[in-house]
Length: 258
Image (cartoon, rainbow, N blue to C red; front, side, top):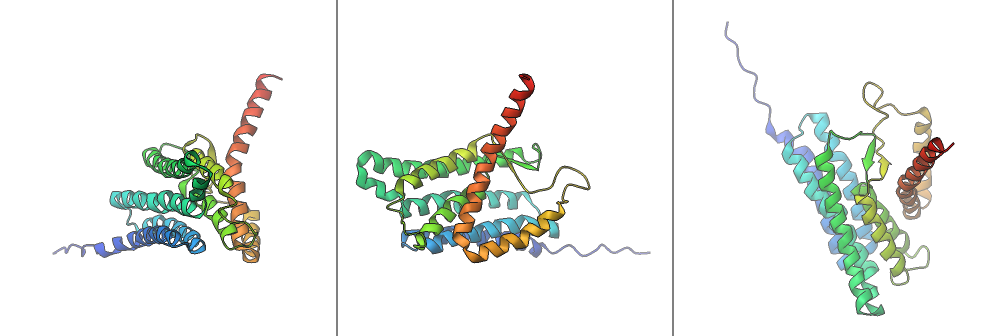
């Protein structure tokens, strides 16, 4: 009885997750171009579009069984552009560049902090790649680069559309502090909830029923005022890590000193 080998699996399916990665890379590149042209609202939206693409490429790769080392490395390089270089340059063109009118030192501080943010994003991505499989998947060590980019770009979007009456020139010092803090949070050892379940095993991907109610509630609030709501969510998530860290240390101190 002759046995025939099954036809080789088409390698074209590997294009699918990488197409999403390329889409995210394009969105990050577009954000840089839009910021250089003064279209800051479109630039901020493009970074959020890159975050959506970044969330899809890995899931598509796992669902289709097309994960590869090439995809992992390509995704990291795309993330560096979309969540490192793009937010730093958008923030610089929108606000930090105006620090030059305060004098030479402050002008250099503006682009230096923008570079610091981009460098911290690169370090954060490199550390994440080396720690895959070694850390608890429920937590991120340091603020994830897409979350940091979301915080930065929601801030720009919330004010760039003139909805609150302030612009990047007036908020240049706030932008300086926000960019600096976002960069440091990425390379910190502070833990952030990753929304990837509660542990290993069958219950890893289960979520409480109340979370299902929160999804439509959040969507309803987003529809009311999208940029300001995103900024509020970004601020709350960025603050959740330090608050959790302080809470843990207070608990340890209370146990050791009853």
